[in-house]
Every structure is written in C-alpha cells, then in structure tokens.
Image (spheres, helix red, strand yellow):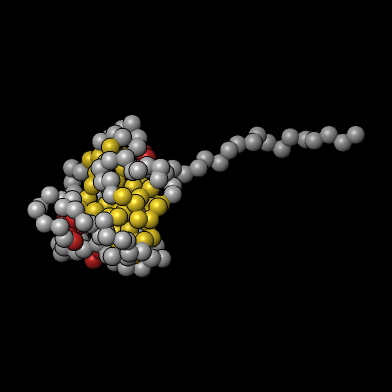
Length: 170
C-alpha cells in the first residue's frame, strides 16, 4: 500500500496586524455637538478617533492622516496629494489601551495650510515609513452620527452610529 511521504513542516502564515494595535476607530464628519469645546458647533468639531488597543504607549511622531475626496483612493503612497495630508505633531503619543481624538481645526497640511476633512471620501492612517495601517472609505453621514468600528477596534465599520469620541463605541 502507498504511504504518504512528508514534504516539510506545516507552518501557519502569520496574519498581518496593525502596528501595535493602532487603528482609526471612529470618524465623525457631521457634528451636532461642540466636540472641541471652543463654544461653537461648526466644521472644526469634525473628528477622527485613533485607538491604541495594545498594552504599550505608541509614539506617533511622523505618522500621518491622509484624506481624499475619492472613496476609492489608495493613500500612503509617495505620490499622494500633500494638500490633504496631516502629519501628527512631534511629541504625539497615544497611551496604552487609550484613544487620541484629532479635531478638524488642528489639520494643517505639509505646506502649512489648514484644511477641512472632506464630507465624503477616504481617510487613511500611515506610519512614518508610509505603511497603510488603517483606512475608511466613507460617504456623507447623517448629522450627529459617526462611522465607528464595532466592536471597538474591530474590523467592521458601521454607519450612522451614536458619537462616542474618546470612549468605547456602543
């Protein structure tokens, strides 16, 4: 009777994971509340929430958020339009198992101009080497709602979720 001859060890292919558990976790484009606490509800209250669900602090120096008005954009490329690129400031950190909320008013591109998050399009989180870590292609939202990962930090984006910036997504 024939017998099977082993051809080598079976090894699992590792699944790529976000750098140290860092992801875009919530995107709020149509705010109804004064998220940035400046006393006015306006476009500056738009926000992106990052989540570090790892047990270590992450240094965000050189990381960037890239935006496009296209919902099919490939971002984190060297030829990306720099007018919609925001580099996180030097000395930016996100604590272990914590959130960092970035408000629209703080978005300054590579040539020093401020810009607003597009009403619909794509947002990507890239590390300093230009590696894509997290991305959302989004359409416009109902006022007061957000795109959110459910469960918190997971792989599924849900539309028109109750805003929960800086907290566990419902």
